[in-house]
Length: 136
Image (cartoon, rainbow, N blue to C red; front, side):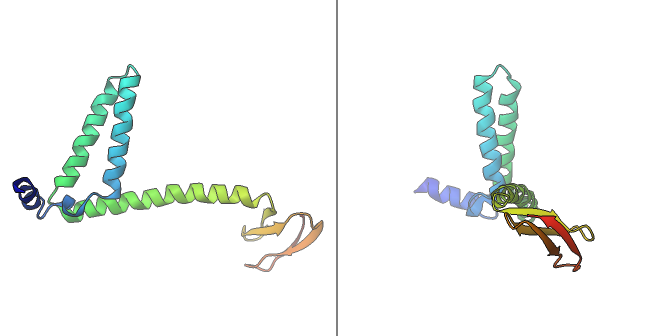
Protein backbone atom coordinates (compact mmCIF):
# COMPACT_ATOMS: atom_id res chain seq x y z
CA UNK A 1 0.00 0.00 0.00
CA UNK A 2 2.90 2.36 0.72
CA UNK A 3 4.32 1.79 -2.75
CA UNK A 4 0.95 2.57 -4.32
CA UNK A 5 0.75 5.84 -2.37
CA UNK A 6 4.30 6.69 -3.38
CA UNK A 7 3.55 6.08 -7.07
CA UNK A 8 0.31 8.05 -6.97
CA UNK A 9 2.11 10.97 -5.34
CA UNK A 10 5.00 10.67 -7.80
CA UNK A 11 2.74 10.87 -10.85
CA UNK A 12 0.78 13.92 -9.67
CA UNK A 13 1.37 16.64 -12.28
CA UNK A 14 3.15 14.34 -14.70
CA UNK A 15 2.15 13.39 -18.25
CA UNK A 16 1.85 9.69 -17.45
CA UNK A 17 -0.60 10.21 -14.57
CA UNK A 18 -3.54 8.91 -16.61
CA UNK A 19 -1.74 6.24 -18.58
CA UNK A 20 0.32 6.14 -21.71
CA UNK A 21 -0.55 7.69 -25.06
CA UNK A 22 -0.38 6.37 -28.63
CA UNK A 23 3.09 7.79 -29.31
CA UNK A 24 4.54 6.11 -26.21
CA UNK A 25 2.95 2.81 -27.20
CA UNK A 26 4.50 3.09 -30.67
CA UNK A 27 7.92 3.97 -29.25
CA UNK A 28 7.78 1.00 -26.87
CA UNK A 29 6.77 -1.41 -29.66
CA UNK A 30 9.64 -0.19 -31.87
CA UNK A 31 12.05 -0.50 -28.93
CA UNK A 32 10.99 -4.11 -28.30
CA UNK A 33 11.36 -4.93 -32.01
CA UNK A 34 14.87 -3.42 -32.00
CA UNK A 35 15.77 -5.41 -28.87
CA UNK A 36 14.67 -8.65 -30.50
CA UNK A 37 16.55 -7.77 -33.69
CA UNK A 38 19.67 -6.94 -31.70
CA UNK A 39 19.69 -10.50 -30.29
CA UNK A 40 19.00 -12.11 -33.68
CA UNK A 41 21.37 -10.04 -35.83
CA UNK A 42 25.02 -9.20 -35.23
CA UNK A 43 24.25 -5.44 -35.15
CA UNK A 44 24.92 -4.34 -31.58
CA UNK A 45 23.91 -0.79 -32.49
CA UNK A 46 20.24 -1.87 -32.49
CA UNK A 47 20.53 -2.60 -28.76
CA UNK A 48 21.63 0.95 -28.04
CA UNK A 49 18.94 2.42 -30.27
CA UNK A 50 16.33 0.34 -28.41
CA UNK A 51 17.77 1.47 -25.10
CA UNK A 52 17.59 5.13 -26.22
CA UNK A 53 13.97 4.67 -27.35
CA UNK A 54 13.06 3.17 -23.98
CA UNK A 55 14.73 6.10 -22.25
CA UNK A 56 12.77 8.57 -24.39
CA UNK A 57 9.50 6.75 -23.68
CA UNK A 58 10.13 6.97 -19.93
CA UNK A 59 11.18 10.61 -20.27
CA UNK A 60 7.83 11.36 -21.94
CA UNK A 61 5.95 9.37 -19.30
CA UNK A 62 7.58 11.19 -16.35
CA UNK A 63 7.60 14.65 -17.96
CA UNK A 64 5.91 17.56 -16.21
CA UNK A 65 5.59 19.53 -19.45
CA UNK A 66 2.12 18.17 -20.22
CA UNK A 67 1.17 20.59 -23.05
CA UNK A 68 4.34 19.78 -25.00
CA UNK A 69 3.87 16.01 -24.62
CA UNK A 70 0.23 16.39 -25.65
CA UNK A 71 1.28 18.36 -28.75
CA UNK A 72 3.87 15.67 -29.63
CA UNK A 73 1.18 13.01 -29.41
CA UNK A 74 -1.21 15.08 -31.57
CA UNK A 75 1.50 15.48 -34.23
CA UNK A 76 2.19 11.75 -34.13
CA UNK A 77 -1.53 10.96 -34.46
CA UNK A 78 -1.81 13.20 -37.57
CA UNK A 79 1.07 11.33 -39.22
CA UNK A 80 -0.33 7.95 -38.17
CA UNK A 81 -3.77 8.83 -39.58
CA UNK A 82 -2.21 9.85 -42.91
CA UNK A 83 -0.28 6.58 -43.16
CA UNK A 84 -3.19 4.34 -42.14
CA UNK A 85 -5.55 6.34 -44.38
CA UNK A 86 -3.23 5.79 -47.36
CA UNK A 87 -3.25 2.02 -46.85
CA UNK A 88 -7.02 1.95 -46.30
CA UNK A 89 -7.55 3.89 -49.54
CA UNK A 90 -5.12 1.62 -51.36
CA UNK A 91 -6.94 -1.57 -50.33
CA UNK A 92 -10.33 0.05 -51.00
CA UNK A 93 -9.22 1.02 -54.51
CA UNK A 94 -8.02 -2.53 -55.20
CA UNK A 95 -11.40 -3.94 -54.14
CA UNK A 96 -13.31 -1.38 -56.21
CA UNK A 97 -11.30 -2.10 -59.37
CA UNK A 98 -12.84 -5.59 -59.47
CA UNK A 99 -16.32 -4.19 -60.12
CA UNK A 100 -15.61 -0.70 -61.51
CA UNK A 101 -13.42 1.21 -63.92
CA UNK A 102 -12.08 4.39 -62.39
CA UNK A 103 -11.46 7.23 -64.85
CA UNK A 104 -10.35 10.82 -64.45
CA UNK A 105 -12.23 13.66 -66.05
CA UNK A 106 -10.09 15.18 -68.85
CA UNK A 107 -11.18 18.68 -67.82
CA UNK A 108 -10.96 18.79 -63.99
CA UNK A 109 -9.24 15.46 -63.10
CA UNK A 110 -12.17 14.38 -60.89
CA UNK A 111 -12.16 10.59 -60.33
CA UNK A 112 -15.29 8.93 -61.72
CA UNK A 113 -16.32 5.34 -61.01
CA UNK A 114 -18.01 3.45 -63.88
CA UNK A 115 -19.42 -0.09 -63.52
CA UNK A 116 -17.68 -2.74 -65.61
CA UNK A 117 -19.37 -4.54 -68.49
CA UNK A 118 -21.62 -1.77 -69.86
CA UNK A 119 -19.80 -1.31 -73.18
CA UNK A 120 -19.04 2.12 -74.63
CA UNK A 121 -20.80 4.80 -72.61
CA UNK A 122 -20.88 8.57 -72.40
CA UNK A 123 -19.76 9.74 -68.99
CA UNK A 124 -20.74 13.10 -67.51
CA UNK A 125 -18.45 14.51 -64.84
CA UNK A 126 -20.44 15.35 -61.71
CA UNK A 127 -18.13 18.25 -60.90
CA UNK A 128 -17.70 20.19 -64.16
CA UNK A 129 -20.40 18.46 -66.30
CA UNK A 130 -17.95 17.65 -69.11
CA UNK A 131 -19.06 14.70 -71.25
CA UNK A 132 -16.61 12.14 -72.60
CA UNK A 133 -16.82 8.63 -73.99
CA UNK A 134 -15.19 5.64 -72.28
CA UNK A 135 -15.38 1.86 -72.45
CA UNK A 136 -16.60 0.19 -69.28
